[in-house]
Image (tube, rainbow, N blue to C red; front, side, top):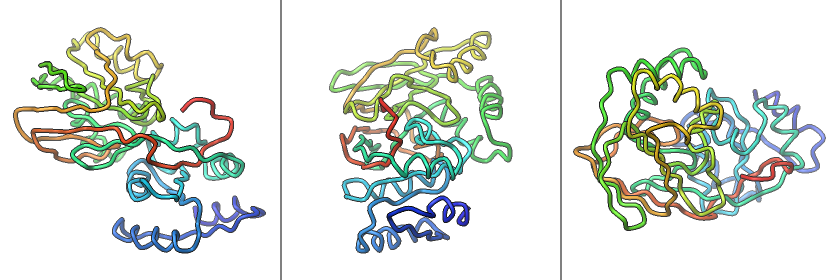
Length: 277
């Protein structure tokens, strides 16, 4: 990959360098050095987990995030219209533009794509440990997990208005998708100052396959049993601490969650031809 990047940068007017990172703990030093050296763009080479770790260190800085997708899902890269090979990504962004996008936080932890609790958090946990990646694996694990999953009750406060919901999934999206073009929030914008709250209240064993397929054709919000609300601040209370995912990475979060949008907080390098993000 390093050699492909060097070849892709050959002939650029600007200088480029490749730095390996053995641990995410090394990123603070690498990014600090880049900032002192006058670097304009820090590229994340990897999947959504790598993008997450680098992006959260660039929030509210002058450094812009570039992405060379090298993961299984590549959700943020796909939303931004970045090609999925190193050569094409570099070629596209060589003449790209820098835009400032929204980020979000859950209990102070940054995220850039989607966070969620419920069924999708359990699927994310199983997908992360699967040795076979890709959309077919995601659908297969989704259906298998669904069969033994039960809806939970949540108290949800959306911009100050409280409601109680039984839900299989409670997803809060800054960008449109989990990855692999699985678009949980197909209308999401990275520049509207809003989060897209998607609540899956119910699904039968008969409707679940069709619902999962709708993730990939952009019509998910038309599914029966799905509610969609836009918000700036979301508070969630559940019975106990439990599984969650942030940008596809499974984690454990407490029973009370506070989710906020952080408008125009991250600079990103993206293709010039992209019209809407």
